[in-house]
Image (cartoon, rainbow, N blue to C red; front, top):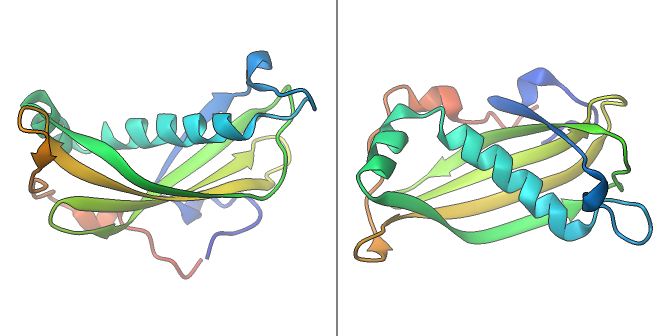
Length: 146
């Protein structure tokens, strides 16, 4: 499903993030809790690429993370620059499920995979809201046969 070595075509969106010294734990590896922060940063950047979602955000809507599953494959050390890929695997009426991978820029090795589900909510009512229709949504959907 996700290649063990970086492949640009595996995901629809990529960002680079440097590992910061304060991301490390006592074993000099990136702390597991920080992996979630990396994935979150990449998801936020990805959402900003979809104008219809950004318009809805400006009108008081937002994603709330409902579920996150992270597979920790290999430790990340300092210094390192990470390549984080993101793509959509499923869109439902009020939910979006995404798949993401963290790779080392220097070795191209896969370090972690995340599958997340977010619920689109109205911030005023704090209730789920229908996702806006996205023109060209298929360009953000992953083909899981890589």
